[in-house]
Image 1 (cartoon, helix red, strand yellow):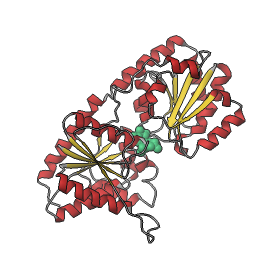
Image 2: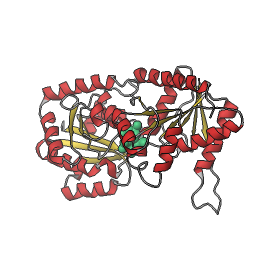
Image 3: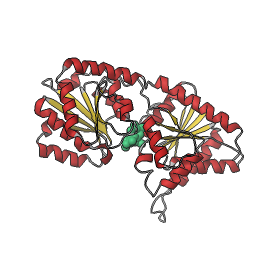
Length: 380
Ligand code: GMT
């Protein structure tokens, strides 16, 4: 199959999933064309079946906001036409689903029908998508997609609750590549970061409000008072400064390390004892899954799709968003009990295996086939 993938190229989970999916499809022999404004972070090496088309939106003094959507539409039209794509898979509704609809309409005038699959990732529905500024376009373009998937059951329900959806939505869970995410021996890191055998707790995110990053620090403070421990804060974003300030106020800077954006997250996760993700809202929680694949139990909120990934009392614990005391209590319970921690580590790995890339990829392939079959007879 010749597949076009439109995504954000940044560190966000939707871009990561889109890139890993494309690479996985390419390894299985499909031809994959990435269309975006910058090379996706995880698209680092040459692969014979992978192509990258950069969207170039020229600046012009008249444009206060460069018209990226228009440039993206034109690039999609071009790539579908000249690379003869069978299907477009767009990740994140805004603006990709609407842009894909526009491209589809232009291609129709050229006698070409290209089916569009839209994958909803979370904030495109629950946060930004729901905003009055975007909602009508999001709803319309979801309804006009040839196939729609969500990354969790919870996100499917949110989509159906928040919008007037006239079509079926397929849940295809996010996945993890065990070739990369597995517990590797990085004891030399451990000796540097926790020289006295302290427990290591980690958090990874884009440090946006929705992640409740300050809660991570409050939880850590309570744990740190009872259990010798270190906190690794991985990633960067708007809340980082506030969070660093909070560490200073609480007097725990010595034991908190802000590592910024990291590529080889799995090497850091390999030395961790616990992962904390207290988000206000989280459609899936790919960061939690990455930790679990590296045998790290998870303390999370119970919002969105997190409980579908992190099983309460099995792979970690889930609490209401903002319940710092309970999350701290659960963390201490685990970190003070070697036997329980080991059991949770094994459970986390077993649960992560359910989301193995090799299990989920065929679901996408089957869905593409279904959509293509339906489109053969389609006349818009
Ligand atoms: O979490 C973010 O702010 C980034 C966002 C994105 O679009 O990249 O993540 C969303 O998509 C990920 C991949 O499907 C999910 O694992 C995240 O849970 C989801 N984030 C939220 O729902 C807040």
